[in-house]
Amino acid sequence: MRERKPRPDGGDAGDGRGNAIAASGVELTYADGTEAVKGIDLTVPEGEFFGFLGPNGAGKTTTIKTFATLLSPTGGSITVNGYDVRDDARRVRETIGYMAQETSVDEELTARENIRFAARAYGVPKSQRADRIDELLDLVDLADVGDKRAGEFSGGMKKRLDAATALVHSPPLVFLDEPTTGLDPKARNRLWEYFERINERGTTLFLTTQYLEEADQLCDRLSVILDGEIVATGSPMELKRRVGGEILDVEIEGEAVDATGDGSAAARERAAEIARAGDVFDADADVAVTDDGISVTAERARQHGTDLLVALRDDGITVTGFNIRSPTLDDVFLAITGEELDSEDRAADAADVTGEVTAE
Ligand SMILES: Nc1ncnc2c1ncn2[C@@H]1O[C@H](COP(=O)(O)OP(=O)(O)OP(=O)(O)O)[C@@H](O)[C@H]1O
Image 1 (cartoon, rainbow, N blue to C red):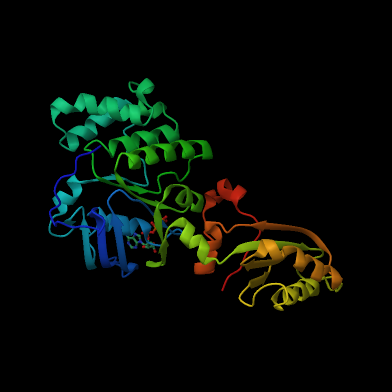
Image 2: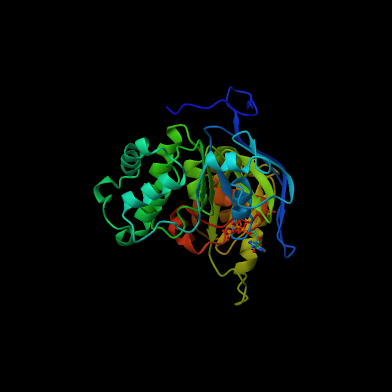
């Protein structure tokens, strides 16, 4: 276990732990007037695996850069590991690791040389460097290829090496800015294992991601950021619960648009009316017409699903399929923001995404 230094602010998160990050009212307006971050409040206790989830351009990187002292906030206050980012930027930098979106490994150098270079840059005492390098190569499973040039590595291996270099000075807090973007699912899974391992050793991790599955799998808590503002914070489970129940997707025969005039679109509207009528589900059920039929989000959707199917059949509506599922973080994002995450790489997550739910 890592030894903790006494905190400069004597800070305490209330449970004996200090706060790795305490941010209040953080604003960042770029020189061209772009308001990238608009008053963010955030507290991350030491040891937490915290996720920052949002679509492209939401303000994730800008926020992380203000925490890592790479950008000076134009408003608000930020304390990192007990040090103020404005007054004690050097201390903050000494106590954090930062893995940027773009891999920063030097492809001309071997894995070992890359880590050695970082160790020197971060002022790791010479006597400790060799052991530290071996330990880190082991941690990210690159010991066998430690003397190979990084230019020969796959994307996933480069990312792992990058993660190792961010850890050379044993920082208690590490920022990971979209670390798995562009990796195939296998490489991504492997990287997740290292992040979990690092977190288990006591390191606080602050991860930004566009992948709901990633946040769901790794994070103790997460905030959803949209257009420079935090719109929700909680554990993945709490956020999923906000969707309010289970989701029943019902496929109904015919086209979504009644181009043929055969009433098939009307069948969907009629099905939605039946689902909303209050006979089957509670009045607070959320019913939406989808591309395939209708989608109902309700408590006990599973229990009452068959009642709905019977009611639809009695009304002469042909059901061609149905599926009951627990909400995913996709549904949470939809429910909160009314929009889906728009990442090109979301195909990799497609296995987890079924049906379509519209939320107000
Ligand atoms: N140097 C800059 N000058 C002006 N505007 C900027 C600058 N950098 C980013 N922005 C803008 O600030 C907003 C937030 O960008 P940011 O990179 O923080 O978002 P993000 O959530 O990290 O997205 P991405 O995943 O695309 O990196 C965007 O509108 C972006 O265009």
